[in-house]
Image (cartoon, rainbow, N blue to C red):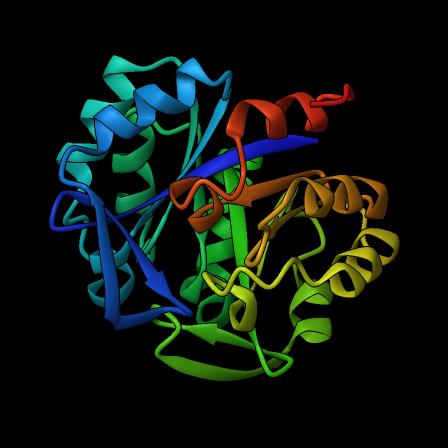
Amino acid sequence: MILLPAIDLFGGQAVRLYQGDYNQMTVYDPDPLRTVRQFERAGATHLHLVDLEGAKTGRTTNLPVIRRIAAQTNLLIEVGGGIRTMDTVRRYLEAGASRVILGTAAVTDPAFTAQAVAQYGEKIAVGADLKDGKVAIKGWLETSQDSWETFFDRMQGVRTVICTDISRDGAMRGANLALYRTLASRYSMDIIASGGVSSLEDIRALKEAGAAGAIIGKAYYTGAIDLAQAIALGEGGEP
């Protein structure tokens, strides 16, 4: 199982939100590249980046920061947040991202999603951000009418889905194991678990549940999870 340490970008800084609330933002590092290098030293091979401003506006506000990170590290980078046009997909991939994540667009613009997958294949992932059983959009500020079942059924052909339980995000309450167990058993795509991953036991349980990967956010920044130990556990050994 792949471990993806996460950085949320706002104003060029590494920040974290509590349950997607922009009014509950903590700045963890004014220089995200410094944090990324800490991830590398811990043995990380992948990085999950979210442009929080892009999620709200659809603009690539933090593209220069993402380009700098990609140029100065060896991590495989996935980027999400406001990716709603083919031009934005192209710009992120040309900036060095290995994969881009379609969130709002995957719900509201099926034709664009299909076009992106047809053109870029496995470089396109989708994000399923779940709130009360529905898929949230626009930086979690709105909730669509799509249930998670409807959304996942429609995403057949997509290789990777990053699934976030918003109620667990930043809350340090543990991952929603029942959800990820159901998704992994029902669908053939790679399921990346996000939200509430706060202990090595969570990682062990997610691996057993069949998740292809897990995103570590707040638990890293607070010291609740040692990233090197988490990576060792995900790769098959004991921490």
